[in-house]
Image 1: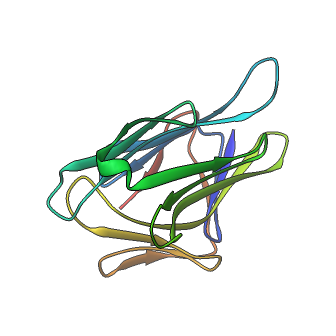
Image 2: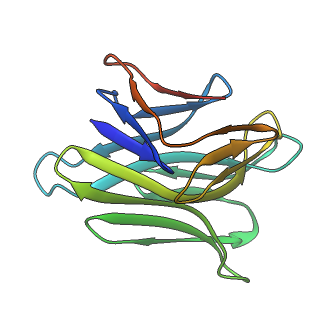
Length: 141
């Protein structure tokens, strides 16, 4: 599976996105329906888990502070009160999933941001690159 993170294309991945060495996002397609399935762990700045999504469904949602909006080709995690999107993944083509927007903390407490132009963690950014994941995880940070 190919995964876009901002303007960066990661080819031949296994669907796992590791951020700062920790698998934080897993994407797959449902075998029969083709629906986008996302596994994701949301943390606060202290590394405490706030929410956990399994197969695009919230399994843990502290204080019911988050909502998942999903279609067959899109999954978005939002703050319930503000409506702010924390993570959005879209199917752009068969075999290609795009993370065009993200704004959340890594397990290590660093803010991870994705825009259409780049991804950014602390002072580290990456934009416009194509990287072969060689059948493994997408490695960020």
